[in-house]
Amino acid sequence: MDSVTSMTFIIALYIFMLAAFTGYVVISRVPSILHTPLMSGSNFIHGIVVVGALDALFNATTLTGQIIGFVGVFLGAGNVMGGYVVTDRMLAMFRPSQKQTPEKKGQQ
Amino acid sequence: MFIEYIVGLSGLIAAGLFIYGLKAMSSPVTAVSGIVTAGYGMVFVVGATFLNLFNVSPDARPHLLVNVALAVVALLLGCLWTGWRGRTVQMTAMPQMVAIFNGMGGGSAASLAAVSLLSDHATSGLHLSVTIVGALIGCISFTGSIIAWAKLDGRMRKPVRFGGQRIFNAALFLIALVLGALTVMQYGTPTGALPGILFFGAALLFGICMTLPIGGADMPVVISLYNAFTGLAVGLEGYVMGNPALMIAGMVVGSAGTLLTALMAKAMNRSLTNVLFSNFGDTASSAKGPEGEMKSADPSDAATSMRYASSVIIVPGYGLAVAQAQQKLYEFVKMLVADGVDVKFAIHPVAGRMPGHMNVLLAEAGVPYDMIYDMDDINDSFATTDVALIIGANDVVNPEALTDKSSPIYGMPILNAYKARQVFVIKRGSGTGYSGVQNPLFFQKNCTMVFGDAQAVLSKMVEAVKALGSA
Image (cartoon, rainbow over the protein chains, first blue to last red):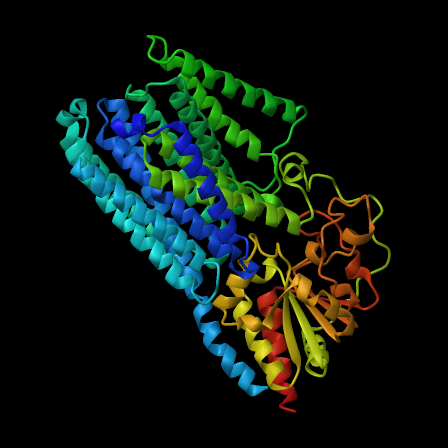
């Protein structure tokens, strides 16, 4: 856990600031048809919390710690898998309509 | 040392892939590759995390075998359960699924905070405070999302409201803050655990109480907000764990989610505070109902007039999806198009239960997305359109939102369907919409109701057009 002490709070604030701008810029030009998949996709991405939960569980020393860690990993894994599956299913639906687009234009 | 580098670099790569994936997800052409890219990043970083097994603290070494077994079981259970639910869930039930998965992330962040508080490696007050703030946000997102899920899933139909609720909630929030401060101050003392436990209890309870009074119509905004909350909590706990990948991914989602929430609230012309604290949808519709009577017609009559119209705009609402009638609708539309009718779909920003939800549902039925228009792009066309066909939508075409200042939905932008020469409304009954407001459009002279289940009505319409034969 040396890395905790070595990373100063100020550097953390820099990271937070840059990440916040990144999120803002990446999403600001999204067409509204993608809002739902995108919410689901970003939902998947914060599932990375499972990594933290795994680390916490690996380092658990008490029964209470193990139980809470177990719950944390379970919830985090659910966030990851559920977020991915749902996003993938939604986005897959946009594919056939793309292929139909030229056909339809051809008809008119 | 070596392991730290490997794990650290894998986190960096994952964070990069996440941002790249999120960017790709913002265009329909690259969206599928986007989620796959982000998925690779996740597999990579989770795999690398197992290298940390060789790097656990000396105290934890005797428990390592048990801990790893627990981790593997928890991973498998979590993935299998949500993987199965995610694969099998109906597209109409997608919003509540997103809510529950998001709540799980918040719960995970909160448990992470709890474990980190239990193992007393925490050093500074600052470090503890960040842990507590992250835990508070994670807890609110966890229980709040569960309530949002229950509301969207129809398990909790009425908002729960009582007198002085706002004061009660504010007090509860203050209590949670005070308990959090006590947890930081008494950390490491023999009685230190008690405020910690009470803090988590209060935070979880606040998440419930904060969400209970919010009406079902506002749930999309609330889910989006909790999505941002979870991101923020993950970012803060990433700082606590000394893991920059969590910090970056969490904060990117935190800010993107906040922006998305703001966009949604804007689409309804309401501020976020208004959504969270105004008890929208509670007021019974104003005593004076709209004047006049509703006209109703046969599905085949309505179908015939659309068949001979030159332009039709379809306004689909959530009722269409509930009736599972998207396929039938598209079948009907294809027949109209084949007969030379110009057909367009008009989507209100908050149609369905989430922004873009209706687009997903139409895409599922195979509707090409260049037939689908956003509100701003199509609103001027209604006045020059022969027929507006409204299916299972109500509040988003209610002209009262433009004219009646006393209406609870006043100020919400609507689709100007009422301007079309002829309006047909397919609706189950003459009841009110999700907001509980009566719709004067249904009493207008140019409006005709077609009562019945959308699936059944559309089937009859398809039959009617078939009977007419090709032009």
